[in-house]
Length: 179
Image (cartoon, rainbow, N blue to C red; front, side, top):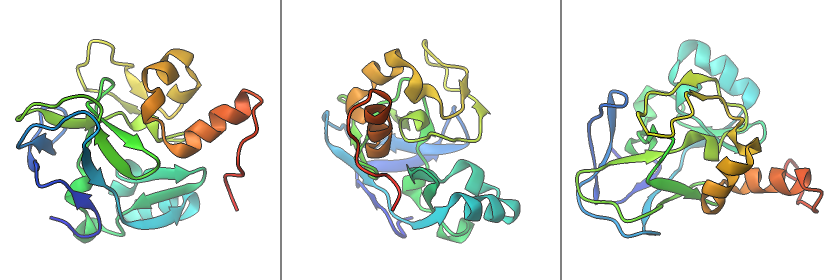
């Protein structure tokens, strides 16, 4: 169901071996092709914490868009199919900017469309990864962006604000992240 995001018509929702439901390629994607553009409402970290008490999906289905701010659905009735990317440490879909999801490589019809949550997160609620990738990191906790090997593998697919944080840590001028 599409409520506030754009999801390529080449995607379908199906049962996932990773976690419940997931997105799958109904048709092949070429590298760089847009798979989804996320939409939703922007929440502060405080609001996410408060809302997660009544709606547990807030802990698992919001996306960091800059430090202290998250994009997500207000409730389960507004949950969008574009929010069904399961995490995989060796993902085939990646973020460009903050909300555009593209194919990281050619994707065959039938493949599950996966996204590495650590490419957008800096303060994720830790969870045990079940992706089954050969180079699975085991725990996803929002700190992978500090690992130089992770950064190099994901250089083209790190969210804008993680790139800015890296610039600051390297002593290069960065744009102010929070107004």
